[in-house]
Image (cartoon, rainbow, N blue to C red):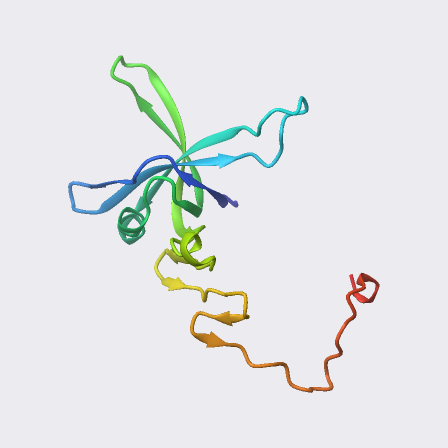
Length: 162
């Protein structure tokens, strides 16, 4: 069976980090995710508010580096929980159990126009940010060599193989 979901949205509030009785970290947060389509009557796109939970190091990472308004990409699984409210009524909740959480924006975006992405789901990394000169972070990619195995394509799409 397959249960994998990826969503991208903005945090509606700062993540809430708690610990279980045995000390395991768990962070809960909500993402505001815009729908890909607008209503037929020309109105604004609707937004879904999706609850997420991240455990252990992923939860600590989210709590430390994400805050209200930040764009996040969450990869994980959908979980349906049954619970009883204070009045004794049976309730159901759907939430994403985050396996990986990525930055969907960068704090540098607003300052320099660059992009950087990072994640935590056992591994943490930051992909190189590009700028208008084609350099990645502090590294500039070498110019293409005159390798005869590759031919330059014209701007015309008719040469593309697909």
